[in-house]
Image (cartoon, rainbow, N blue to C red; front, side, top):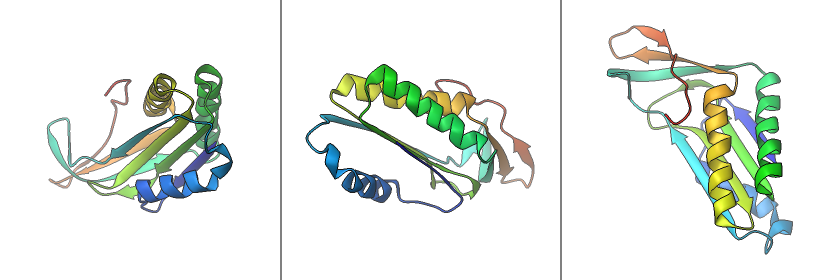
Length: 147
C-alpha cells in the first residue's frame, strides 16, 4: 500500500508504471488491476471554473486514506493499492487523484477501486475552493457518493 499527497502535478500513468515495477515481487500473483484517474473539470454547478485550491489536514488525511485502503484490503483481498492525491492549486484537465488496486480477480479489483474512490470523495478530509471565471470564488459543498 502506498499513499502520496503532493502539491506537484503528476502523470498518473507514469506513477502507476513506476509503482508496478517497484512491486515486481507481486508479479504472477495478481490477475487484475483496476485504475481510476480523476481530473479537474472546467465547470461545476453550471459555472465555468478557472482553477481550484484543494486543502487537506496533513497527517489526518494520510491516516484516513490508509484506513480506507486497509479496509478494502481485508474486504476485497487486495494484494496492493496506490492512492495519489493532489493538493494546492489545480488547473482544469490536471489529474487530481489516482486510485489503483491489484487483486487476484477482476470483480474484487473493480469493487475495491470504486469503494476506495467513493470513500475518499465523500469522507476524506479534503476541502475545495473553486475560482470561477467571473472572478468569484466559492467552497465546494457537494462531495457526495457517486458524483
